[in-house]
Image 1 (spheres, rainbow, N blue to C red):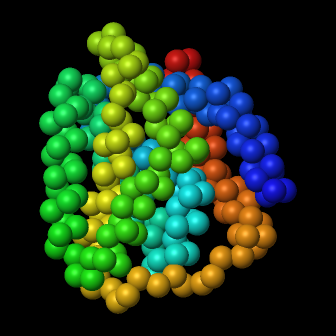
Image 2 (cartoon, rainbow, N blue to C red):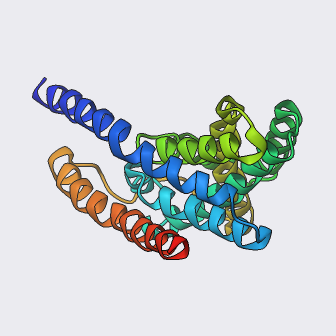
Length: 231
């Protein structure tokens, strides 16, 4: 009961913080990215942002300890998938591609790759959990607010065109994890360690502080670059 109460209070505080700071940061970054004239740099920044924001997602750490992968290995693999799909999701908005076509394409690839995994009964649940774990309380507000900033600035598009962006991004971890399992040929899916709630809570606080630092550092330098360019 105490743990549930603490979680409720924590989520309430986080949602207030997200609305006042994180979403504003994402919207400001998205607006500036929409004005980026170099298309290559835009794609690199989108990949980098998707990667960094995924590193800050605490759900991934919780899932990683239940897989045969090392935590940093697992998080990096998922972050790469998110970065790639973030690019695809933004390109869909910029070029006005039908959302249904994109979803059928990416999830069609994901399902075909899953059919190629050996020991699929053990690996496939981890693969799809990886896709679900990136739709958490840190990555989603940042990614969606960046998408809104881009779509509302680029050619006067409406912010609601970001609908489906989270669904596209979730396919990224599924695809890269499936590819990893196909080539890694791992054994039975057994967690590396049992979970201790208190120990995990303390570890999660430390990991969250470390994980959020790249976002703060990136925004600090990015915002200063924009400011110096205006002078």
